[in-house]
Length: 351
Length: 181
Image (cartoon, rainbow over all chains, first blue to last red; front, side):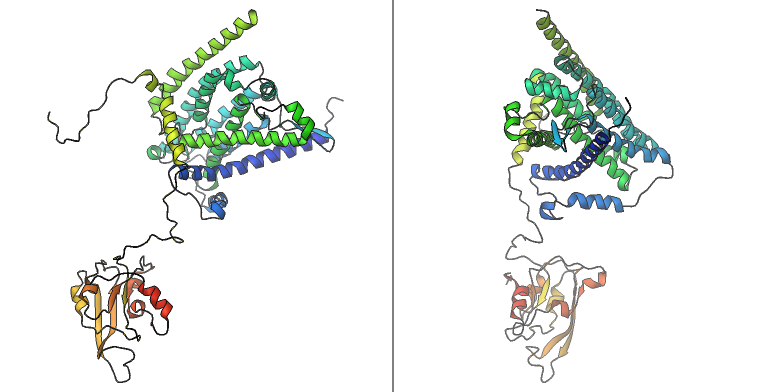
């Protein structure tokens, strides 16, 4: 029968989902700590060091504080949407991680387990779809707050994300022409056999990473929350754990987009200069998968660090500069990149 | 127009070159600067555990001194109160009774001695005015209290521990400060 449900598969996927969600939550938690430490070190300070050794319990204390804060829902807000906003932001942030290939397969209890929640053949389109839904969380929350500053923040977020999504998508089309697949897993496998996509598409990568910064609302594109202009931007009216959700979603987004970037351009879980087929024979498949996961996380953490590094270096764009950069620079560049890539591919394939 | 100072510098208003307009080189330059700062030592002093060394003439909270036998030096002459520009010091004198020779060095002593730490400006003039070496400014600082009345320090708060019975506490209260004389 076609609809026979394999119970093992359901359990396997459930466990994988729980592991991925939990670990991305923990990573996001410690990303807040890392952000403060990186900021401190770059500014010749020490950073949080009071809670536990090296301040390692600081994120726990922060989380606890957020839970115990008074939860304020403004009288003039639309209550349902006000609560929907942060939930949606969090949900979309978590959903993206479904198509990321964290590693190759492992064999446990006689089952082949793919370390990817869903290997769908349109993986990259799924990522796009979910990421662009992320702005709804911000927009809905901002609009439902019924506050001028929130609305300004929400408007900025919406227009910024729509503008940068175009350049991002076109930069990716060039990449798709090179790889010839939409599945993230297939892309990673392709890069393991050949060279990393960043070498084939350097300009595409630069455009992509700039757009990712904009999509994640990170400095220098953090106009949506611009503290010194808009109080708190879209989350001005939020308090307690609802604010925590927004802040948390930002860090999860950061981690997940780093992971997407790694799988698209930096070979995913590929270990550079290592013959995988040979290594699998010597270490065994399961140990190899562990090394792959470590490699993947290492690369992703580098990009998370990169996000922070940029944040503590570059000041925020002005709004018109943001729009100029998006529409007048990145979009034409991405188009040229796409045309040149297409021309080169056509030239080599027809010869 | 003539420049007002000799420090004025001409501003380069030439249009930006292509490389400058590309913005990315400038970003990488900035990022290399911030990256370099990662390897610099933070000049932080972790306050409660570490303290900054004081200057030898640091002026902190007052102490009322005793002599080597543990007798109070103060004779309630009032010169410190007169010298005080903030009018923070008040005192009441009393006569030493027979049998109190081990408590007070001379025949007159301060029965009540109060300094309002909210008025005090820590100028050290009381210390300079004192003919009996009775009042000193110590290295203790940052008094904290929940109420204003807690900042009016009475004799109990000000008096240094007895050097005969509690030599360690005495040395700690006295500190390494050099009095201006």
